Length: 282
Image 1 (cartoon, rainbow, N blue to C red):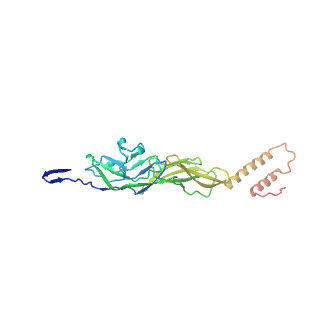
Image 2 (cartoon, one colour):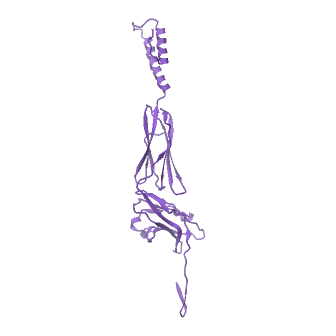
Image 3 (cartoon, rainbow, N blue to C red):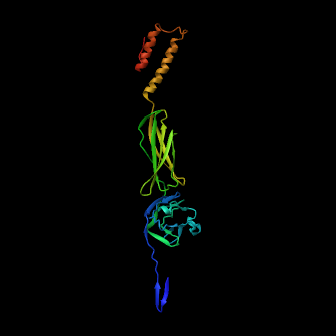
């Protein structure tokens, strides 16, 4: 504003906005139909705290404001700030990402005086992805014995930590645990770890891990695992059945066609079973 103080003399007071530095990624990926959380941080000033955070396009269309009447219709009900400005956190969530929600979107803030403060490095471009990242599974043993327990993990990266992917497995499991890890680039990794018991029966089986992203887009990773019965277990079962059969035969007094000296016959047949060789016994 300018003040008239003397003929032909005006004194003008110009208020210059101070540009602070914000930490916002220049480009950030998002899955269409899902959500994205754009990481944002600003220096916190305890003596002059910010009272309102605002996100807008470069044409000043507001995409987030705590007063919904200020938000353009296309973004109403789809944006919210997850962070606390009093802690220097200005992170923004955009839900139900549309193919043309590519920005750039810029952050600025207000104080009690309603003056708007802009920040350097505060604008982000959104790079759209049509399909989610493929989950990755830890290696499993090439061959396991039936009845043994196996622990395996499946991980997937995403940019929607407020609604992380949900995992499903193709095998029933004894234990299950899900962890979330943040990387400095703002990318999140969600990991599902299970312990399951290998089912009986020979042959190669599929072990499938499926990650379902927010928005309902599933994507799977298939691993192969070969389950075998222990040879000793099979042999023990064979011994047990044969031994019972022999004992039942020896205790049958009505069998008149039994060859002489049954004790020797019994010993001979048992030796055949132990050696696994088929030969004529007398």
